[in-house]
Image (cartoon, rainbow, N blue to C red; front, side, top):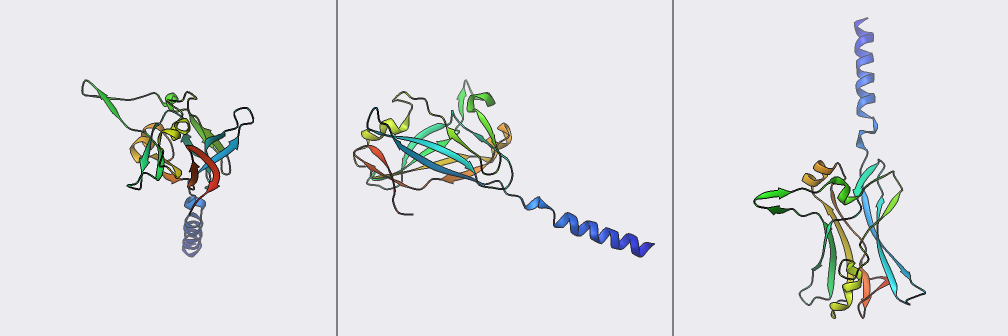
Length: 176
């Protein structure tokens, strides 16, 4: 009886160790570039893709955005999408979870990161102001603290770098 119990315990322990607890939450970022027939210009959208094997929740709008020039000559840049805190009268300002439009993605699903379409808030419409820029990638970052607060994926993911010509992003990646 004791031997059967010990054997059952070993089998149960092995089953727990071999369980799918090694599931990963992975996210990739891609730039989707398409040509507008109306304006004859390229339109860029940022896609967030669940490349892991478990569901993941992402923030799909409202993050702070800005260009981070990785080269001193300003020819290469990242469009950083991340959450940053601000304060009012010494108090940390906290936005509603709804402000960031959380989206639950199953493995293999994707969502579009939403920018407002005005030229001042759509970063791709500001590329022309950076005359020296030759390439751009997107970096999406959610800190552990923000992930815990908003119940989302945490980490950083980068897209491939795309060529920029005369302030317009191209459907051509550069380097790797």
